[in-house]
Image 1 (spheres, rainbow, N blue to C red):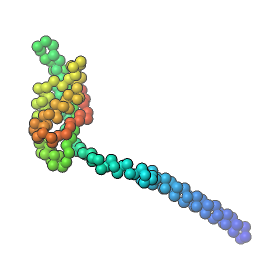
Image 2: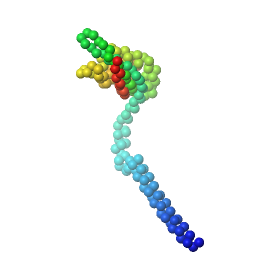
Image 3: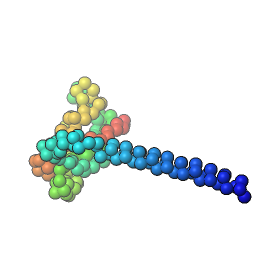
Length: 167
């Protein structure tokens, strides 16, 4: 029995050491994580407060339109030949819940206006007649959205995906 007692005391002593080391390591990691998460000292927080007071950024609310077709035509002289489509996924970006509701109520009208504007307009790049000009398309669609829902409602139109499907 006397032989078992020293072994048990040795095991419990090393267990206590590991427990204390684990607690110290956990406290150190927790403190370091808190320092990283909350930004360190109060001196660094003062400039952040000043930038928040300057102007809060408008948070844009995207309304998604999927698979809007843009036809591609090859023009030679006076003839035009259909050669395929681009399919666009886009976001109509607004600010505020009222504008979001207005645009969502006008989804069918907007989609019809977008398709009408796309078929009448030339959205291809100047150098390449089969490459879509994303900026030109976004501007055209933003202007058309302003005609449908009113000026100032739509802040921007972002084309999130364009995929060319040849004929």
